[in-house]
Length: 104
Image (cartoon, rainbow, N blue to C red; front, top):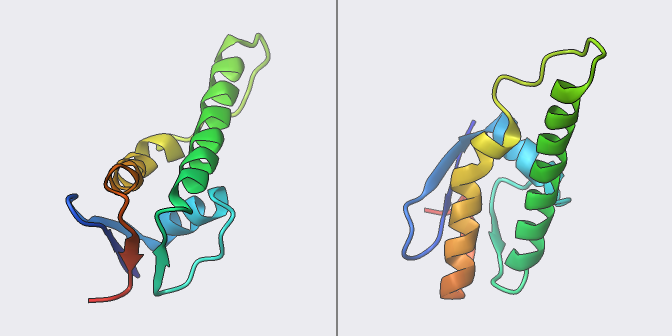
């Protein structure tokens, strides 16, 4: 299923279920087919998503510096895939606007 997230003054972000679920797991919020992030919630969600992305990047960096043989890092890390969504959240925060999805 495809999910479309939008806020004023920013292009909508369209994501598939797998990425949407990964992002919602990162921000520690259950996903619902319709919803809204209120402006006062957005800073918390940005911080949580950035923390997960930073942890992922640090783990990949440590693994590449290690002498041990490790499993290769994901070809498509969350940070790269979630970047448009993170930019949408930042724009909504800047404009003090909500982010909505599942409504037309």
